[in-house]
Image (cartoon, rainbow, N blue to C red; front, side, top):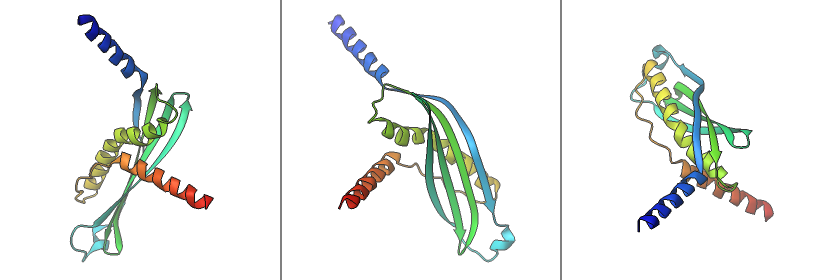
Length: 163
């Protein structure tokens, strides 16, 4: 019985060693904040309407290391005026082992942004607060849903191109 448990534990260890993502470095790549002066927004009432947009760049450094840059932009409009614009780019150096070629797009487009997004969110909140605006909490992003949507759009585009 003890031998069976030991064999099962060794099997689990072998599986956990098969696929591995190591975060080697996380860094602030770029940050910018632009805001109107309060005089330019005189007469505007209430909280600004906020829009969040995401983009990502990747760069393969060698066989098993990638640099992933996640850009998050928050634009706040007060009526027709842009109250503020805040963009933060956080990068990470990730090392991968044991992932198949088919798994890598998921890992790079879902797992890596999940690591980087909290850094972006914190930096944006700090910059907006320093600019004198109230920043409601930025909700988590379901990067898996975003990835699946992009895959479906890509497949639909391929089918339309073949028709």
